[in-house]
Image (cartoon, rainbow, N blue to C red; front, side, top):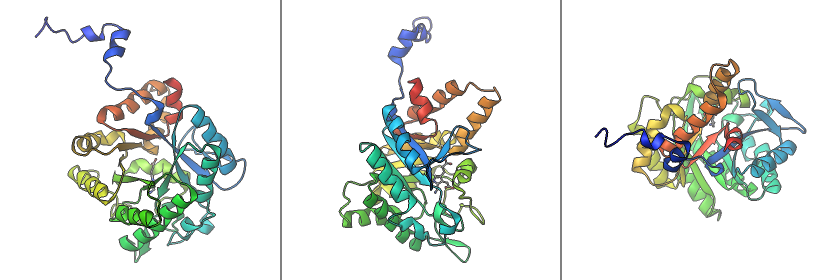
Length: 323
Ligand code: PBG
């Protein structure tokens, strides 16, 4: 009761504030998404993601050395696949010499200690831009799961430490886990995009990979953003099926979901601060309407406060420079 308690006492100096601060960011909090393209000496700007690039594998090697030197310990790889290699089955995703497989090897050769995470979904390989196989205008579940399982195995064979299915098919975690175990990849981690919403915040990412759906939307597999309980169902099932890390995506608009999960489950939770969130801040900062670095750090801390262990963020490299 006032004046016995004064809430402002513990805020009265910078040192006191530091002592009682509840959450901090460290380089160990981050996963760095990286976009990879064919070719050499390519560093391609992505217009809707200012400051972010697509890298050819030779430059990717240098990039991961820089990230490692900054203290970052995990990268999440995405590939931009040439149109000629796209089909309905995602055939190219299983090519042992495909771009993803070479990118994994490149990172592992450049910095063996770097944790290599890979996106497992068909969209960058799909002529329809969907995360699964299309039949009669529908995205079919079980046939897709079979291919995703082979894809995850192919990534593990190439050296991936963590496979990250982002497709939202039912049963893919169990199938991938069984596949990995049977092939003796007993230590391959599965980071499941468990609560992944059908979101319009993914627009810039789809520009980056040229992976927009050719027809319709992703609402029959990604979650309805009006739903909260469903996130718990999805996530609990993924854990039962063998996920080691679960993810909520997008990030900022879904902090309530992160908090719900944190109070209910014990496995590590990751947030994905997605491309549209990155683009919004970049655009506002370019106009001089927001203080880029201050807002970035405020947003990143909010994920920790909500309860995550890991943040996949396009801001990772900028943020660690400020720590
Ligand atoms: C593909 C995938 C998407 C993202 C990550 N993996 C796009 C989508 O589901 O359409 C989005 C990431 C971002 O927007 O930063 N399955």
